[in-house]
Length: 228
Image (cartoon, rainbow, N blue to C red; front, side, top):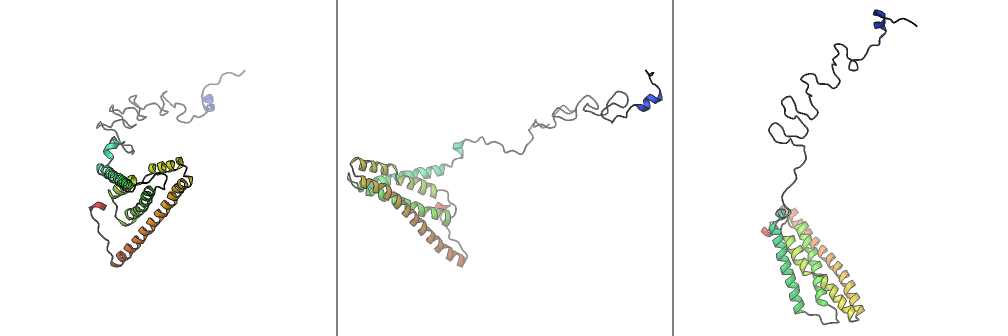
């Protein structure tokens, strides 16, 4: 066995270490994750030398949280976001439309076992008026607030009826009038589609007539408060 080497020969054979892995002198590290002075970390979500947090979503020195770029949640209730005027327009239109259909039913009653002409006329005319109205509201008139809720949703929504249509069909089937009941179902469907197409066509024709004079004279027609 060889004797232990010492002195300058042993020191020259020892490998050279990279800084950061082994301490160079004094037994104290220069870096490596330990604090440099004061025993306090610089960052990492803990408090700074002043005792106040620098980041991490906690309150700033002023006591207010720092914004993170996310929209603040709305605590406003759903009822307060609804426009009371729109709800009133829908309710008023519903009262008038339902009353109009009721009056027509009393004026033109349908005998039992016969084709329900009144309900058929109400639904077909309602489909035509709804298609025509939507063309005016969406393509001819300026943006509105009360016309569509009042006329389309309220009045025409309660003027037309699905329940009475089905009740009349059930009564026809109960009395054995199967052909009349089938005509009531399919005839109302096809007539309603035809009335809708006719209303759209007439509305587009009216739109074309209004666009041409406005393009020639370079002016637009003004409307009243009801279409604002």
